[in-house]
Amino acid sequence: GTASAMMEVHQLDGEKTDAEIAIEVPSADGVLRAVTDGQHVTAWPEQPPRIENEAYGDACNVTRRDTTSTPCEYGNVDSDRTVVMFGDSHAAMWIPALDRIGEQNDWKVIQLTKPGCIAPDFAIWSNSLGREYTECGEWRDWAVGQIAEIEPDVLLVTSAGKGIYRVDDGEPTQDGMDDAWRDGLGSTLEAVSPHAGRVVVIGDMAYPEQAGIDCLSEHEDDVSACNTPVGTAVLADHNRVERETAEAHGAEYVDIIPWFCTGDTCPAVIGELTVHRDAMHINENYAVFLSSALAESTGLTPP
Image 1 (tube, rainbow, N blue to C red):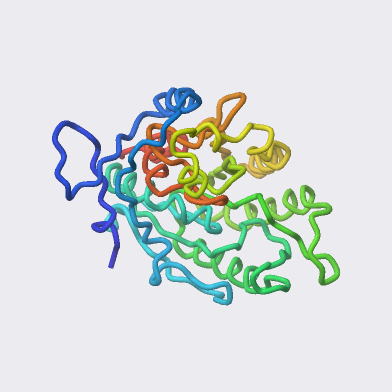
Image 2 (cartoon, helix red, strand yellow):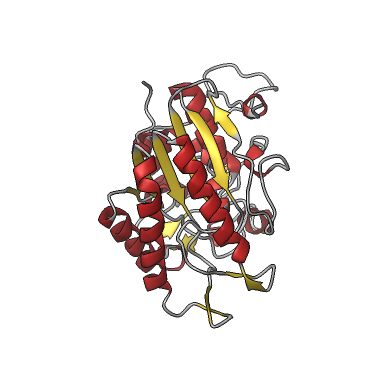
């Protein structure tokens, strides 16, 4: 009952057949070198076939109105070592990387995600529903119950920080967001911590000024036009709040900004791969490119 076989990724070593999707997966240090090199890319290289992310498929993804979801499994589904990925679509976007990590390092990976539904526990606005996103609160409570039943060895928690509005008196606002995030994430971490061996908050990504692939399609020979300055791309204050909150509640925190940006710029192409699928999510192939770095930083090592 798993989608792993459809997402198999082969490391690039010598010959590859057309049937294989070949993405070179560097170490964490190799990723940092690739980010530095990404500043100097001028032409958009031809891309490998896009890996399908089963986390977004009909069986595993849910609608805005759903208050439960299917806890889809990836990686080595027979393993007794479990990792749960909990959060919104920014949690789901890591599933291709976690599937590969699970297969290689012997983890069962369980997806508990809902689109637009952040892990921190506070009332948010749904732009698509045009009202308070009550289904998010209901789903989050359900997911915390699932985590209590699963009792994962490792719980990964991540959420998009951009474009979130809290609800105040029935209206959307971004006033007071840092405090709401601090209190809400703290509340969620307290709820899940007793049920997981380790809890790791994966920090927010860097956001491109223009939607990834769309921008590169228009600037194939001038990739730098799609690079974004760090000051624009990185939600530095938000990321600091997340780190402080994670550490205050006994969780680990992984800063992923170095996988996207140098001190100055966030390149649109890194390791010859398109970094962002759209304005809000990373490309599936780039997620896989980051899989060794993700495993190293979250401690998802072999037994």
